[in-house]
Image 1 (cartoon, rainbow, N blue to C red):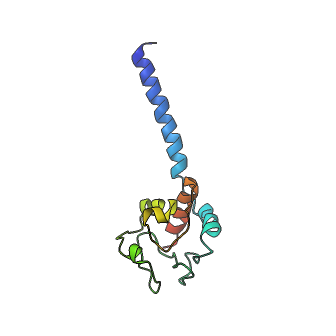
Image 2: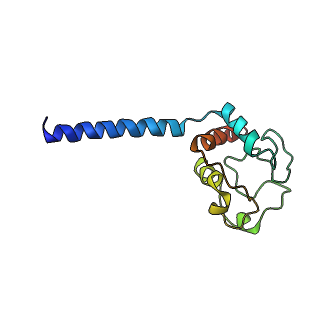
Image 3: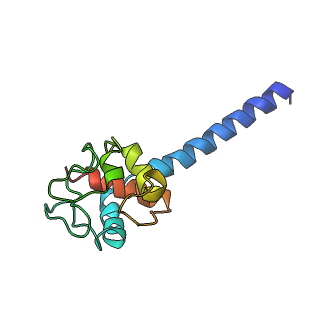
Length: 129
């Protein structure tokens, strides 16, 4: 086998592996995300289908909304001043560790460590505009 053939085969194998990994990480299932939400979020937040806040604000209509904008909830000054709009990417970062993303936020939750769980949770939040 010529050296260029080995390099070409190696690139194909690496590319295929990356697609396989990214395909799993990007898979989003709102039904699974609802279970993730119930496990991690309902202690402080109502289901996104409900308008009322609890310890934390309601998460209804989160995706696309400005951070710290749910009416009637007293947010931390640092989150209010953050300028964040809750896109999928911003939610991914937030759900990985709120205190890392916005030090001083009231949300003391350590984060959802599993990337697939975060993706599914975001899918669930997106399904509740």
